[in-house]
Image 1 (cartoon, rainbow, N blue to C red):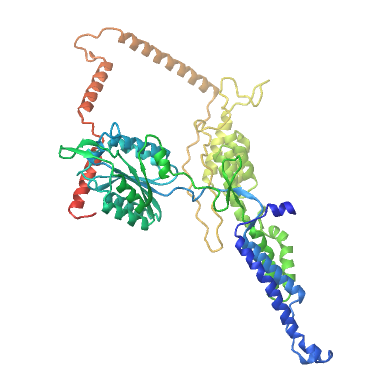
Image 2: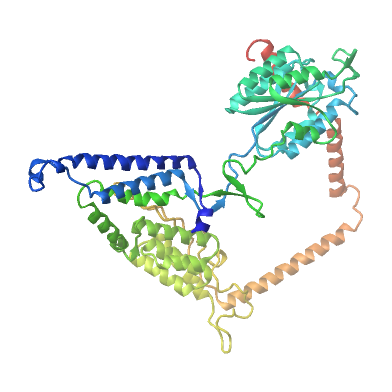
Length: 592
């Protein structure tokens, strides 16, 4: 008992405070009974039944005990008791969606982070996408405006395919509009319908407009963090006009942006310490929260099973007794009839259950046989279909027996299907094919094992195959789901086309076929030898095949390679054209 109490856990323990109401209810019941007995001290006992109209007493103390027990069961069921643990699926523990905004201004060509800020940022993003855990990730770039490279996707590793094409050359105009990057990231999260999200800004500076936009995103539930590119000392670079400019890392502005966005600011480092500090790698939530306990040594998590439903059954029985007189007898009768229900629901030898009719049980067994047939377990499928009535089950059983090579039993099954449904086209076709395969297999000779194939035949000669003309059932007939009483029966599916029965082959025909095959192989070998001998000779001048085929193929490949080398290698051309068109639409006021 003590061990059971030690292992008892309540999922919703606050409901146990409702137990304090039970003594109050018992006190009210007792006070009411005392008020009803006041006249006993003033009226003689033999006159009291004739002068006082008494209410129907629901059992006295027994009724009170029933109501108190019902209330106790209700409270315990609501508290969610559990005395065993189950493996907890890791649901709801994926990280929030992440939108990465990378600056692609000409300042990213500065060499204060050797070899350049851009290459360091690419390497950092490649590591982030490779280590990104569960959760959606998007990538956008910005300079004078912000553009989406890839929308939110759960496959973050595919985002690394765009990194080599990212450079300031793909941007329509140069600039450092960090506010537009945050606005575009917020738009992506809103379109996704995310109420929470992360925005990682990889930039070197932020202005007041960007800080205000970060505060707006934070009020919407999106945390804005910043990863600084560069050094405070900075380095020189060429701007969009070709002139020299000096780019520096503005740490205070990025810190202010992160503070307004509810995130963090970290400077880019050579290792992954910056990503761990920003907490954007998509690590799973702590499984010890919300009542989930880590599984010792199992590498997973456990949760307490809510088994309060066991208290619902006695609660229903107790409430049933309160409806009318004779409720106890009704409950006992219902419980006594439960073992009789399966025997009542019988049809054609199939026993039903208290929860499923006989046709539903038959449908489930038919599906089990179909799954076994598709998995190649033909003996199991035949055994399951043997217990089912009807032409469909007999036909499917014949297919399974034919797959096992039991041709006689398969023909018997097809005959049973035809007796139950005369004119069944599928059964007739398959029976004819199996019968042809059986007649084609010669009987065993003297002293030969009947189970061994005849001399000169493969091991599968006795088994039906599509080449032998035997049936290749492929998929068994699908059972139709049990219909409701108001649903008309579904029409039977049209029978598939059947192949005509091949003529049985005699042993003489088989021997002639083997001789013809040997002669054909000999002719092919002679022709191949003659062609190889002709290839060693020097071709005559002016002959149609004066140039060897291999030489012509090599020249064609060289021409194709030269053509491909003349094509410009521009992996960012598609992004450049896309961003230019979108930039022109925005500038013309069509969309923002």
